[in-house]
Length: 506
Image 1: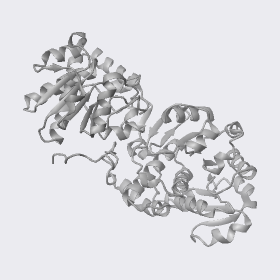
Image 2 (image 1 turned 90 degrees about the vertical axis):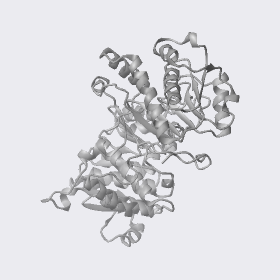
Image 3 (image 1 turned 135 degrees about the horizontal axis):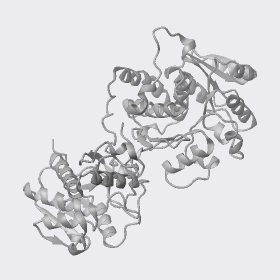
Image 4 (image 1 turned 180 degrees about the vertical axis):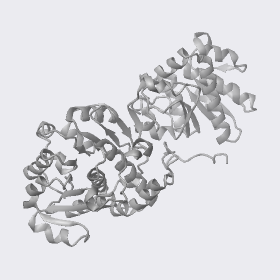
């Protein structure tokens, strides 16, 4: 599985490798070779401008320039600073460069060069300014092809935030493991295609780092997926309850159908009396009961999981249902109205205990929590505060557990922005919980399956299509092979308004 490292953890990995006898210059040579090789594989030979910064990222750039020039590419190298001021391995790589070194200027970007961005790596902590910012803004204005070394300059490696300005890259080559900023928005978009390259850091250093964040992929949770047992029956696969409202009945129906597709053995919608005819006219495989039976259902241990919130309504009734389900020990998904109903007193929800899965979007999150910062940080702090698994929905959905584990989903396509898709997600989580999957794993698996079903369907998606697409996702998981597109852990997300200027080499 692919962990996500913080910048501090990446520095520690470098230090551990060097303490283990891997020379720093060897790491830098390997990094430059990986970038240059990635360029040669993807582009036809053309004029290249390598922009080098004053640190180790610039040292990598000197290696890239030397290798490309040795392969016959026309290369110009510009250094932000003085060669004499370079230190350590960067100074050594500069000494091995036999070409000229010029001062950076916007004029270097004339005539449509391929730009190698080796100005600053993932560890940048302050906004770009001065000449560096001028160069980046000129690159974007001219829509030049960019290959970024480690991270597009100006993207915070821990948060994905843009510090002042950052170039739109076609390709980013990073080293050893991806960083959180490669997965979080908007950094993920600015990276373009991401290549994670081996530069000789031993995998064994991860044991000491003990990273707690990952890209959300099946390797993270597939070993705990619930599969039907040969001697099993529907009662062993759990019984999911979905609380339905009296007005927006479609939301609960979507959640219930998704819960069934996720594998729950039985699914019951519990709804107000006036809405029962609507729910009973739906899928015949869904049981429908009146809301007056809720307390009895809570006492029945066979009804082991519940989804509350989709279309349920905001207010005291929803609060009472949610608190009763948690107090009864049900595995709960709290979404939409069930979250907003606790906006005035979220501590009342945390006090009940258990480990529910909360699925807020940013607006709902802000009603319950006051945490600031990037999405990964906010989700982790919220999980620690609430004792719940928090699935913070968005284009870079983050799932965080109270113990600090977190996963970022990078495979969710834009067509998920359609009414009812969140209800389907809540239902998938509920269906997995009903079968006994642990809350963090269920939330991660559901977010991934949700995205894969949307990707497979493509344009024109509506929420119902997600439910119909789940069997194909299950089939691929059962066969132990990856669904189409899964080999793109960091997809090329260049916006349509910024198309590639020329085809990649084939």
